[in-house]
Amino acid sequence: MIRLFKHYIPHAVLLLGLLDFALLMLAGELAWQVRAAQISMDPGLFVDRWIPLAGSAGVVWLAMIAVGVYGPYALRSLRFAGARLLVAISLGIIALAFIDFLIQGETFWRSTLLYAMGFAILVLVVDRLFLNSFLGSSAFRRRVMVLGAGDRAQRLRMLGDKQESGFAIVSYIAMSEPERVVEEAIPREAIHDLGRFVENLGVSEVVLALQERRNSLPLSDLLRIKTKGVHVNDFSSFLERETGRVDLDTVNPSWMIFSDGFSSGRMFSSAIKRVFDITASLILLLLTFPIIAIFAVLVKLDSKGPAFFRQERVGLYGETFHLIKLRSMRTDAEKDGAKWAEKDDPRVTRLGRFIRKVRIDELPQTWSVLKGQMSFVGPRPEVPKFVDDLQEEIPFYGERHMVKPGITGWAQINYPYGASTEDSRKKLEYDLYYAKNYTPFLDFVILLQTVRVILWPEGAR
Image 1 (spheres, helix red, strand yellow):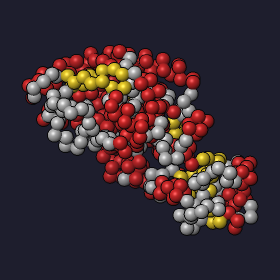
Image 2 (image 1 turned 90 degrees about the vertical axis):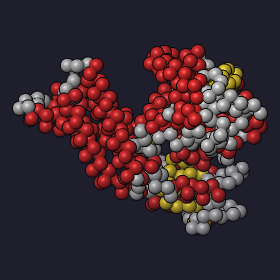
Image 3 (image 1 turned 120 degrees about the vertical axis):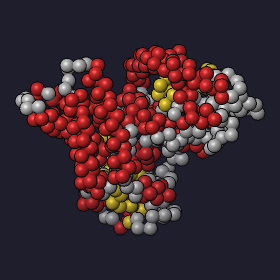
Image 4 (image 1 turned 135 degrees about the horizontal axis):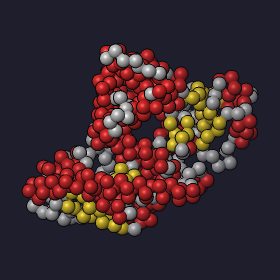
C-alpha cells in the first residue's frame, strides 16, 4: 500500500485510478475530435485544451470515487463495477453540464458531453474487462511472510485470501508456539538462514504474528530481516493498514502510545476543518432551508408531536450538547428511556422511514456544525447513557471523544448501521483509525464516499 497523507491506498486502486483518469482525458479528446469533424472545424492542438480536459476528467473521476467505483466489491465484481460506473459517469456529466452553464464561453464541454459520456463508458468498461483478472491476482499484491502459526496467523490467512486483498502470504514460519493452527507453517529450526530464505522468496514485508511476545521476540531474526531491506511490521499495525480500523482484540495502551498517529501537528488541520465547517454549513443551511421547512410541516401532518427532535449527546472531550433532527419516531419512542434502534423499528413513523432512508432527518444537524458542537466529519455522537455503558464494556471507547463528532464519518461509510454493543465495538475500531490518522485529505475522502452511502442506503434504520 501507499501512504498518502497518513491514509493507506492499495497499489491496485492507485494504479487503476491513474489509468482511469488518463482514459477519461482520452474520452474527452475523442469527443472533441468527433464533434470538430462533424462541424468541419479545425480541432486545434491538444496542448491548447489539456487543462479543461484534465478538469473535466477530474470531475468524473471524483464522481467515480464518490459512488464507490474503487471499493472492494467493485474491484472483484465486473457487474457491480459496471453499475457504479454508469451512475458515476452520469453524475459527472450532469456536473459538467452545470459547470458549463455557469462559465459559458470558457469551455467547450456542453456540445460534446454526449460523446464524452459514450466514450468514457466504452473505454472504462473495456479497461476493466482486461484488468479484472489481474486486479484479483497476485500481480499487484505485496509478498508477505508471517512469523507465527497460531490464531493471529490464521486471521492473516483469512484476510489475505479475500480477492480484494492487497497482499499475498508466501510463507508461514512457526516460532515455537504452543498451538499451531496453520499446519503448513515451516518450523523455524528447519531454516538455516532466515535472511537468505526471505530473499529467495522475494518477500517485501514480514509480519510478526506471535500470540505472546513477552520474552519471545526473535530479535536476531528480525534484525537480520531488517538489514536485508525488508519491512518488518507488528500484527496490530499491519491490520490497521490493511483494514482501515484499529483492531481492539490485539492493541494495548503501549501500542496506542508509541504507534504513529494522534499527531500534535493537527492544529493547522483543525483550523482548516473549522473554516470548511462554517462555510459549508452556511451554504447548506441556505440551500436546504426550504426542504427542512417542507418536511417539518409534513412531519407535523403525519403524526402528533413536534417537527423536530432534540436529544442530549456526548461531544468533544465528553461535553454534552443537544442534537437536533427532524422527528422520525413517535413522541413516546423513549418513554422507557433511550434504547437501540431496531430493524423495521415499530417506533418509526411512516414518513420517518422515508426521511431516514434518504438522510433528510440529518439536515438540521448542520446547525450544530455551524455552532461548533459538531463537524461534518467525525464519529457519531452517542446518548450519554449509552456512552456510560459502552465505556465500561469496550476498551478505549473514551478516546473517540478526543475528536469532534460528525454527521458523517469513517465508521459510517465503512460499517452498516450499528444497534448493539458489538456493533459499537466494530464502529469504534473505525473511529479510532480516524482519530489516529486524521488529515483534511481523509475528511475529503469521507465526504466523497458519503455520496455512495446516500445513494445506496443499506444501513439506514
